[in-house]
Amino acid sequence: MKFAFSISSLLAYASSIMLLGFSLPLVAQIPAFNASTDCQTPMPLHLNTIDDFIGMGHFQEDCQKDSLAAVSSFTQAIHLNPKAEKPYYNRANAYYALGNYKAAVVDYTEVIRQNTSRLGFTSAAYWNRARAYEKLGEKQKAISDLTQLIGDSSLNAEEYLLRGNLYKDLGNKESANTDYKVAENLLQQYLSGSFGSGLQDPLYQKMLEKVRNNLSQLNY
Image (cartoon, rainbow, N blue to C red; front, side, top):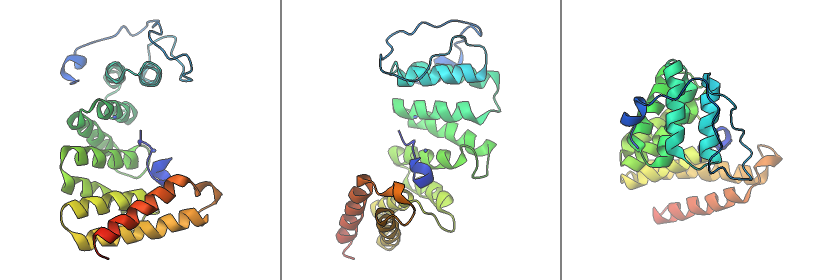
């Protein structure tokens, strides 16, 4: 899940009311119910630390395909340390996967509040919150988050492409055109190997075709 995001991002989502009152034992062995036989995510042997509960949440998502259970595990990690940003970020991703975009926004916002720099999970939280705002129809808020990510400049074509799409949806053709042009230029550089041999991926060719199609729709 993009939770992969961009060059940095590409390398980066049920209600919580019942879950917040639910408490797992702090030391417990958990059987691997309904686990996929080819899943490589390890299951914690015990649950007594933040990392144990986060690991269990990842196991539940990756192997059991149970994002709701993962929300509960990440919530337990938050109970152990409400000031740790990692479990909020992971719980937000699980909420996003469940389609609970409002809850995802709340947790991404907490990640951003705890770490206002571009380190840690902050950049990923801005990206994913923008996507959640997009799902909620709050396009201007999504644009604000993408603008925060892009800053003075960005080498992430996906950020420009998404912001261009949002501007286009809002009828701001000039801003949409500007972002699409930047995305087009970056994608051309990706495909030419300007940023290293690892970026020549068919995905970028598809993105470039999409950008050019959007530009043609704007009559530029």
